[in-house]
Image (tube, rainbow over the protein chains, first blue to last red):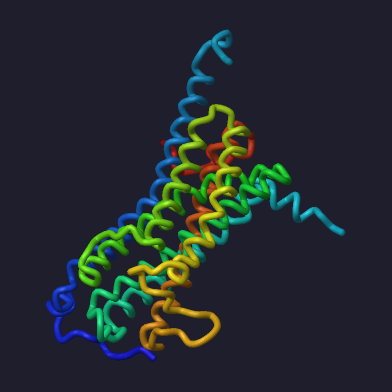
Length: 68
Length: 250
């Protein structure tokens, strides 16, 4: 079912007979958006980890009467 | 009847541990189908005789619009389950579904606008399909904003679930908008029953991209849910132990 490559050259593939900027821009912003959807939870997890580590350090070093 | 699975399913810890093993597989399968689908749609599917190459935007526009709507059902259903059975995990799923759905709706709106320019000569028209999709975006935003507007998590969850359910009225409007009103937006190209108006050489990569976006959605929903679980359960011993053993020391 897969037909041949539809473009004569790489340059042709990029310009897409005048529609290149529309097509490539669409794919570009989609990739950016999906990358963010993958990265945001990773950043959140890292942030949570540093926060928990700091809490643990504080619990270890502070005198007993300062512990919550 | 054995209800143990039902209770376990509602346990955030069980969910977190169970899904750990699935994630790499799910990620590879998603990436594979999206890469093949994109290459196929961009380079190998034939050019459209009326629209030229601009139609290649369909390979992200339609799948993202599908998932924007399907994601809304997921969010509303998770909210309903949370309201009825008070299952903690389902509210976490509802919270996670909102930003993913909002982003997918935004992708379909932006790619639609970019596709509209060379095809209709305009970026935007206030037609039924596009306006109802914009409303879907605002419903998602509403759920996100409500989640952070309330201090108490319980009340925030309840209000978010109620808004999601009320917003369900919009779903059939989006779906039927191209049939009910005269619009610029073209009617559905893929049909489950009856003949599709798209040639097989263009439809196969589209079906692959839709499958890829479904996989991506499942991946993202689990991904967001897992981190939200860690956040909400950070005081518990199992999360503390998990972080103590992790190599991600910060």
